[in-house]
Image (cartoon, rainbow, N blue to C red; front, side, top):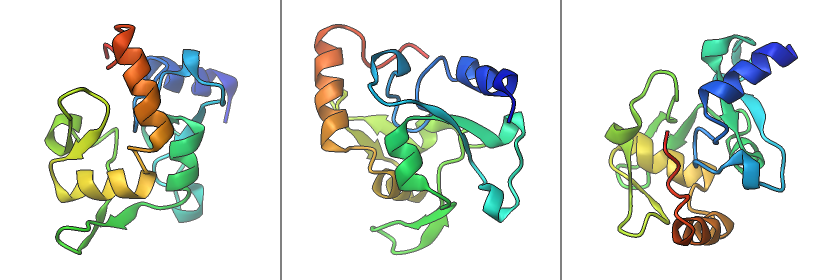
Length: 137
């Protein structure tokens, strides 16, 4: 993957993780261009197959493209940042610290990627107080 492609993915995401909305500028861990469809499953180093991802989300997603929705107990596709509409699958709770799944895809993605990790909730609380969360995307 070229630096140019990586930078285009970063710019498209406005320097935020496309899964948990962590902001790169205040993260102590590096972000990366993550393969939505992993290379091991035939995914390519192409703009439309890459999502800007924090280390935590990338770690929890790994090579997964599906997960189990704990409500329906069905295996469903994970949220696809290029094809899915965020607001159809997620919403913020009242204080914007936790994501709520509105669909099987949303619930399975939250569970698989641990989108409400304790560290993220704490960070969201601090950023909300500072007027910097949720990011204006």
